[in-house]
Image (cartoon, rainbow, N blue to C red):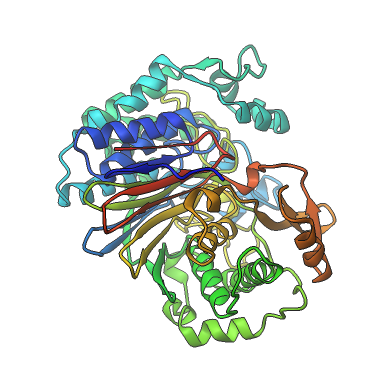
Length: 526
């Protein structure tokens, strides 16, 4: 079994080695966990462009050493011109995945960095912005190695090649560059350099914001400059769930964090006694189905949520859902929103300040639209909207779309604090790694490394897709229970991954950390 790295006082986990190194540098220089995360987020936005960027969104969970938990919603709304009529008139019956028309929501990530730094300062942070953005600027200017996975994604999405500005940044002579090739984005370096000196608010209401707005108009996006100027990230009340041994936290709508907590809460009421058994996996799968059915009725723009979310997480409500689960038969699959791609990163510093953060462009490379002046590639989170006026998440200017992102955080009764999450497959991946660690007693690295299942849409209907390394008898038992099983023939499947966990122990202050072998990740610490 692989050993879990243990550090004396602090640790970071990230899906890219360079982002982890940035976080470690900030911690070593005396920065706190929030400052380290902002720096990691900026570096990841440059070196992992398939998964995230300054033109995307983010969600934060921050736990102070004394127990107070903060949640930040750094997601953006649809632009002023993003109306259903606009898309109908252009012949669309659904929002396109790539191109300027997919770049229809304001990017909130940078605003989230700014709001997080206000919190960092209130908690004693003193690191200058130019230091926090320094690595990101350097990698954009001097270059970073292209990952192997990036080329695989581009080979499967050739329509990206024709999106405005994409080829100039991500291709070489209209072809895929080999993995390991050094890529530079000098315009992005200049934009980040300007923000380092003018402040992050300049992204929306300054010189950089003016250039972004002009570029968005130039390529044909429905976002106006006023949409950028009026954008503000929000401090929101975190969702919480009391379990037998811990309190677990997530972020509220438009994030699907409710589904992650519901899955864990319903599963606990099933009273599964042994991990890695058919009962364990069947229980998690069926709990997630119940959670997703609730999610699809509830999650929408936060201004329009009609349900009492605390009531949905109450013990009696969770028990009612658990009673509806048949331990001998799989239920029909409810609606599944395919997970996007993104990054999850975690950090706990020497004082016990813990951060769990997710940042994303939604699908690989987002809309694919590169803003010509700033070199920023814009997300396509707005593709989660529907062009059906009667749907739960209809497109409308100023509305926020449904979000797959949901970082996790847990405070255990014995004093342990855990930051955990995944860049893909949440909430299913989150429930699997958390239950393996917290319920089954696996070590951190074993819980992250263990094979995963993911039920999603298949070519012939709903499928439970399994990585290799599951016991053959367990697979047979799941099939007998009525699950439509597809064995992927892969030890590690990319869509099942990009997860990580960081936990601090109260007795000795040591920090354990693990990140997914399914990503180019790293854990580092002090």
